[in-house]
Image 1 (tube, rainbow, N blue to C red):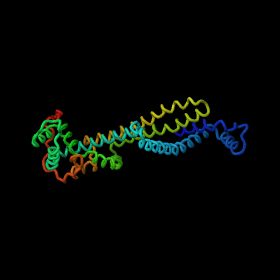
Image 2 (image 1 turned 135 degrees about the vertical axis):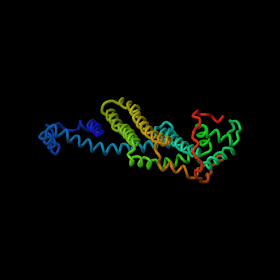
Image 3 (image 1 turned 90 degrees about the horizontal axis):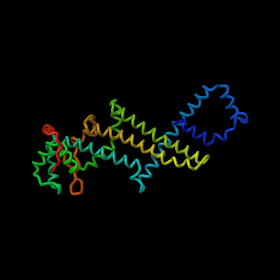
Image 4 (image 1 turned 60 degrees about the vertical axis):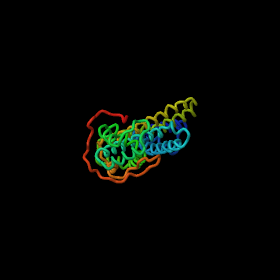
Length: 297
């Protein structure tokens, strides 16, 4: 990254630097020092300069890119921005995590199950046959898909997803603290995302410099460079979805999810939200007697 910025700087101002024969003052001293030190020492010095420049410029470039992205998400073109698409995918993943956890609670918590079924009976689906509460209960306990459907219809999963999203940073920190392999994979994808996004700024700067010094046609490369941001955000989305998939599958039992087993749950009620009263698990898990995914109808 630092070398890329050095190349950009050289393209921008290198032609203004005098040759060794015509240099004077401090620049002449630098030329003499480089000649005396040799190529290896010069290479080391350039590498150190590239590292320092890369550390500073990368952070500034990422911050600027994220700031511009946040501003664009508040405009009319928000739906086509990579950040907006990432937020949509993240919200869907967290909703699925919450629904999966509550579906398990539905299986073994009779009081919670009764509350959800009462809410379902109070606002039954108009496009499905009428069923008694006991019939819905039997169907939901027998089929995982139906259980998820009942929870998704009755529970305000978006509110729970927002709560999980607010705690997502702590979830990742706890995974890192436990040296979970999932955290290593997340870190790899996250670092790859940062690298892809960070490469946009120096390459875009190079296009601008070349457009000024050589030909305006170089600016035509900018739309292709924006692809780096999209693929970078895609890597970050993949990292987040990997965490969500592990949470939903029960591979990771984080406290943020564990509390969904006991806390009051927001339910949908005629377009508004009510809070289900707290209840404790009092019946054994009845599992999935039939692995076939059944539709409620």
